[in-house]
Image (tube, rainbow, N blue to C red; front, side, top):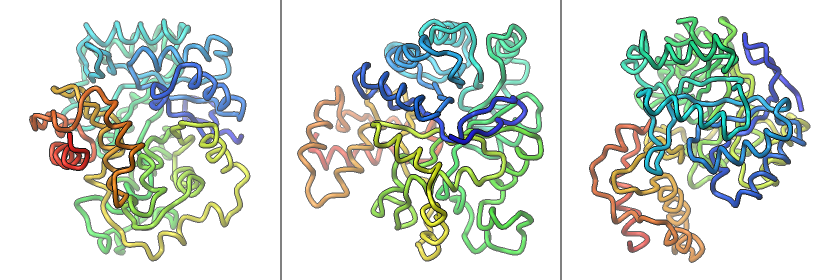
Length: 383
């Protein structure tokens, strides 16, 4: 496993990392074994944005055996309230949630303390002088967090954070679908003479290109989330390009962006770990995403659910991400597969229970019309 310096943190991280958000989907012993297996393949960085006790306990079970072998991205402001994920800056929730993270991970420090999910300029401005930010700085001064990072999906916000000098690294969503055609610009504009970047950035949204370049200039290492767009890029029918890419091609794309140190992939099985790690000895032909996309119909990825979970909490207690996933899987088929329907029916709450309050839509980074999709899912599954 090749390793890269994570910007000015000086940490030598594996270029293939572990995005931990799927751990809670499986029995604890299976997920513990999966994380151990990933470590055996040379993966040494994991992101823990999840506030639920099960996910944290799984990671902690592995860390208690070999804490020195893992770098942890632990998020501040991702909290567990009444059995639901809630993003907050309220210290009465932030501090206990972070202390719970340390306890469940069996550690007294977090390598990368992440300012969790800053996606608007108003949110960024509200952090200045806040009790929340003072707490983050205090933890850094004490060595409880070794380095300060931030997670965002918005390049304008991320650029402000990089320029501020506050953060040392950035967790950002990168894949060709997100990069190549933003919702508010046409492809022909992106390919105009106005671009001032290297060939490797040709065709990328100018604001994203500027962010990657800025991170490289300021030595702010990037770790990548959403590198597979929730698996959508692997399927021709769900891909916004109308053609499928492989895990190796998506990984290669992310790792060739300026400033990127590691791509954090989500894993359900050992086979998926193997597919990602295969990048390390893949041929140039296997890595070549450009030829695949050359004649593909470009479409915006805005409006596409990547099952990230930021829509939580739901007033009606729906697991929106899982409902969307089952809906997407089922709608690809002429008839709803019984296996998909059975998994959907096992959910505690179903799409028909959506009250269309649209509070979730205000939290969605990608502008998904969630209430409309819940209505469609209810019709498709009959409940």
